[in-house]
Structures are given as structure tokens and as C-alpha cells.
Amino acid sequence: MTSLDDLPIRDDLRGKSPYGAPQEVVPVALNVNENTHPIPEAVAHDIVARIAAAVIGLNRYPDREFTELRDALAAYLGHGLVREQLWAANGSNEVLQHLLQAFGGPGRTALGFAPTYSMYSLLASGTGTAWIAAPRDEEFELSPDTAVRAIREHDPDLVLLCAPNNPTGTPLSLETIRAVADAAHGIVIVDEAYHEFADPGTPSALELLPDHPRLVVSRTMSKAFAFAGARVGYLAADPAVVDALRLVRLPYHLSALTQAAALGALAHSDLMLGMVDEIRGQRERISAELSRLGFHPYRSGSNFVLFGGVDDPHAVFEALLARGILIREIGLPNTLRVTAGTEIETTAFLEAIAAFAPNRHG
Ligand SMILES: *Cc1c(COP(=O)(O)O)cnc(C)c1O
Image (cartoon, rainbow, N blue to C red; front, side, top):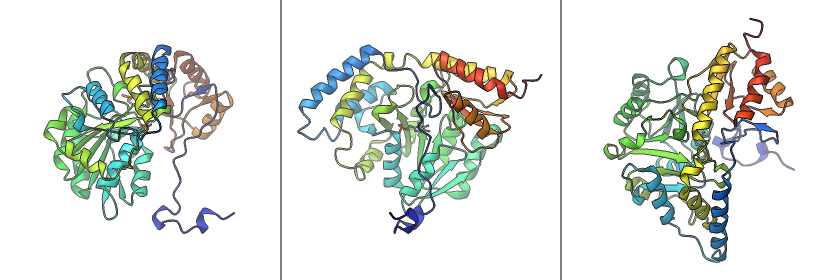
């Protein structure tokens, strides 16, 4: 057996680590921001029926343009969007990869505001794009001034805004997004993976598309839609941006089974999203209870909470894991991240974390 170091691997990949959230079989998995509620049974039956029908036709390649799916996604997003503005792939990670393949590459730069989603820098290195990590304000917030200053300083080819931001949960104002879209010369991607969990009435960057032809809004069915295992992500942008992505995708990248499953889920979007309010409630419960215990939860518009005030994050992570509760160490000092689960899962987490509370003696 040889080792990775001995292989003639690309120089820019040498020494990098792959995406690696631990995958462990535990009773309470609150580490990768999944929707922990299963798919409603009525929807599952419809999806199975659609997949069964698609199986008969698997001798043929699928619709390369996934036309029906793009129509369904446009209808779901609203905002007057039409199919020419929609694109989809196997998870929004692949959507983001298509964007970096088309608009990044050797000699080009992509900028994000750290700490942010760890896949951005990995996708950048995979496509030979230089990654620039610009700073945030206090409490991981991002003001229009701070964001625009970084854009002016670095003049990146791509900007990745995560709204709300993973792993911090921080909501991002439409004001900051607009300021970035106005200041940047290149492509501005707003990753709204958690948008459905934002407080009701929170505007989407989709509102800015008509005036910003280089703006891209990406979404996923992995989180609010409870569809992480199916691998479906999508974006809305100007039709010309979508045309650019056709140059880099693999032919027939979305299988007929994936298209059938996604159409089934979208046909029942109300049911699929039925748990979002409940999850938002559990998120608020986590934030309130962690505050009461003396931890420092950061502001969250997502289905997870990042909290500081943890003396030894690794020891707490291990102690919870020993009790069958998996949360996330994200490498920020004295912090841990937890996904809002069902009420029972959330209770299990809150009871376990109380043993490590700064206020436990108070
Ligand atoms: C979970 C997540 C995604 C979604 O990834 P998929 O490939 O669609 O499962 C995208 N962006 C962020 C910030 C995420 O946290």
C-alpha cells in the first residue's frame, strides 16, 4: 500500500483534509444540521410510486434539462421566477461546485467571511480557485461596511455569503447582501441553505435578483425539506448564469430517480416543511436554556445554535457522545454547535449539557 503523500497528487491538494463530520450511529444525532423529523408517510408513499414509475424507464438517460423539476422549484420559490433561472444538482454542494468551476479556477479568487461553511474553501481548492477568508464583526455579525471593505480590498471573482451563516447561525441582513452585490464586480453567491428556518418575514436575497444579474441564490432540500439523503440542491440566477453552468456539469447529472423523488417532495412542500415551526421553537428553547445555564449562545436564524462559554469543548463533546448524543466541534475556541432536534432529542441534549454549565454552582 502506498500513502497519499507518495502519490503524484496536485500540489494544491497536498496536506488538505477532506470534509469529515463524524458519522456515528447514535440515538441523538445533532451534528450536521439535518432535519431530525422523518418524511411524513403519505409523502413517502407518493415518492415511492413516482420512483417506481421512473424505474421502468431507466434504460433511457434522464431529462438532461430536468425541466419539470426546474418548473417545480420555480413555483416553490415564487418571486416571479421561471425555469430558465433555475438550476439543480446533487446537493447544493454540487451546485456551488458548478459555480466555482464556471466562474473560479486557476488565477481567480473566491472570498468568504470566516468562520463560514467549511465546504467553500474545499470547493475552491478542488477547482484551483484561491480562497480568501475575510473577517467578521463582533459576535460573528457582518455589517455592510465590513463586507464592502473586504470586497474593495480583494476585488474577488466570486463572493460566498452564507445567510444565515453556518457554523455560527448568524442571520445576514438584506442590506449587507445588497451592499456586497453593488460593490462586487464578480459573481455573488448567497447560500440560503437555512432560509426556511429564519424568523417569519425575513426577506430572501431572491428579491435582489431582478436588479443584480451576477447574483446567485442557492438553496437546498437537505435541511428544512428533510431530504438530505436524496441529495438535491438548487439555485436561482439570471438565465445567462444558468447557461454558464451547462458548460461544466456532467451530462445527465441528475438521475431520473433523483428527479422523481424531488418532484414528489415538492408536490407536498407544505407537509415536508410542516416541522419547520416546531424546529424553530426548539432552537429558541436551546438558546434560552443555554443562556440560563450561563453559556453564550450566538444569534441564530437557522436550525442550530453555536454557543460559547465551554471550558473544554472536546471533553464535553466526548462526554455527550458517551451518553449517545452527537454534537459538533467546529474548531472555534470554547464553542460547540448543536442542531435543534425533536423535542425529546433537544431535552436529552439540554439535560446532558447542564452538567457542564458555567452556572451549575450558582
Ligand atoms: C448543509 C449546507 C448545505 C447543503 O448541502 P447539500 O449538499 O445541499 O446537502 C449548503 N450550504 C450550507 C451552508 C450548509 O450548511
